[in-house]
Amino acid sequence: MTDPGSAALDVALAYHRAWTGHDIELAMSYVADDIVCQAPPGRLEGIAAFRAFMGPFSQILTRSELIAAFGDDTTAVLMYDTDTVPVPDAPGAERLTIRDGRISHMRIIFDRAPFDAARQAAASR
Image (tube, rainbow, N blue to C red):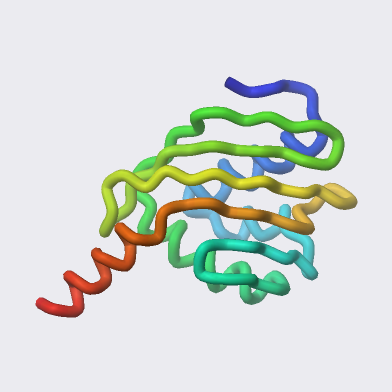
C-alpha cells in the first residue's frame, strides 16, 4: 500500500527504486551530504559513511518487494522485503526525514542476526 501525493514519499520511493535497482549513484543523489543514519550497525554520519554502508548491500541484493509506503511533507516510512546473496529473507523498514528535497535523516530497522550468521559460516569454510 502506498500513499500517493506526498513530497517526502516521492523522494523516499525514488531513492528506494534506485538502490534496489543497483544504481547507488542515483540513490545517493537523493541523500543530503550531512545525512545522519541510525542503523543496526550504529550511527552513520555524512554521505561517505552512508554510501559505504548502502553500496555493498545494494550489490548483494537479489530481490526487493515494497510492502508499504506512507508519507507526508517531511517524513516517509517504507517497509520492504529483500533477498540477498547471503540471506534469502531479509525484511526491513526505513523512516526517512526529507529536507530541501533530500534525505537528511534515516532510521533503518532490520534483523542483523542472519547476516552475522552468514558471515560466520562463510569465514569457517
